[in-house]
Length: 475
Image (cartoon, rainbow, N blue to C red; front, side, top):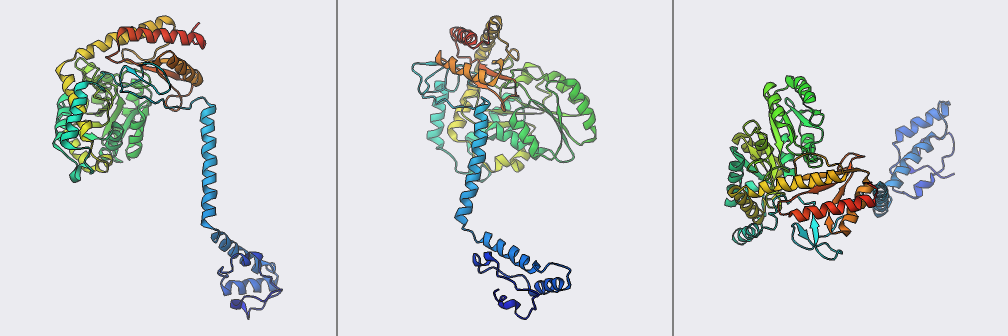
């Protein structure tokens, strides 16, 4: 046996204690306190504990020292290897489920006809949010170039430090006038607008009531706030009323809904929502990303379409779809709310200002829209043409009277394969599957643009019929 370490000489051991092997791996390990060793020795001598207790204390202490002394690079590599294994397994599961989302590379401007990397010839694009065809409108592009030249590439700042230019204030005022609201505030995206609203507005004393199929950005924004959360069944007004009755005990009640639901193409029953909100003392919030610019007589959105513009309290929407298609989002509503958001909304306070070129493009898009609603009127006829022809062919099209026309297929792999074969026939569409839509409800989402011709629409329908029969989706 070896001699006990110097710190323990004088402690009478009942049996020889060998130096644990791991001590050689971590010679600098701190030994257990002397009094603990002495107590363990006394217990061993009296028969109350095994004589190996001292060795166990040494083993535990020295093992920890040995592990902490392992090379950090080796531990980091082990952690990285573990992470890679977890990620690879997750990715294999996505592939195996047929829900893998590939990104096709466009080599041209956005528009009804585009060029795609690896595909020869022009392609008809039927899956963009370019509802009014303004993404590549020459006047919109020119306005962006002019703003870039006059105001620079960017601000290198958030708004409240040195990131507010005259064009930002002008656009916010124009948005408020367009929606007939008191004020508006710009964000880098509508996702940010939704992330900033609920947390800044609602407290633990309040309640928010949300449609179960609301956009992910609304869901995530609501998660950030501390209000009591109620979820009502999709478009189910009886369930909303029951939830409103339950929420009467809270200070504020905010009903949150998409105006038009992007995956299904259906429209919120705002007249009934506003009636219930008035009856139960609630406020109404509407996300109008898939409505602003083309729903309603003058493109103001679903609140104009359904005649409740004066009953909707707060609107969030985007500049990244119908209004130029670049980027940016906003909240418009009561002036005091907008002032509060400038003070508390984290995505606004901690994100760079919108680039001048984006502001210039969006501002011109609004000008064009307010000058004439002819382009809005043309969309309804083209949407109806596509829907009626597809349904006559035997397809199920979700929603109603919205340029989002989901072709319901159910199976994720079928939706993906059909979309690939549509591209081979010169039609750009994308299959949507879980987690973007619920399991078992995969579909190809078709979106009609004002700049599609009737011939474009007919060609798309013909390709669907051919590919549908090829894959057994049609008889």
